[in-house]
Length: 120
Image 1: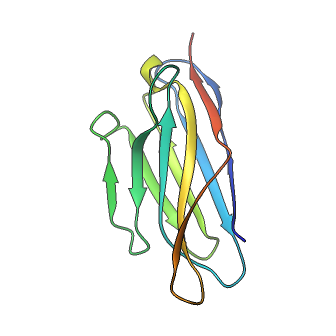
Image 2: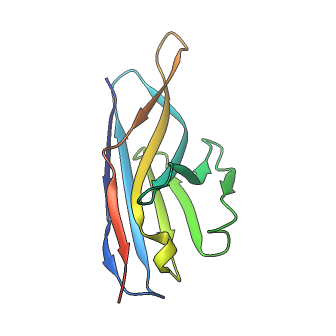
């Protein structure tokens, strides 16, 4: 079984920064793409940023240039550095991990979510 645990959310003023972390664990699994999604109140969950095991990245247009996704493969951890935050970034942020088992089957796992609130 795979566990995905996020941390780092909180309350920040407009223009401020936060760093989210997501650690994946699970014996007999290798971790492929890891990404961040968010769900704002009354809106559907949307992609924020994703990074492959080869460290290729992709970002939503709304966060390009402000957010940076990175990963530490030795720790199976993905990070999201969020700068110049604004009210539209307020949402629950979820981590998604694609994990491959010893049979070569890939599964997706979600974290429980962490709240990010941007407000003065």
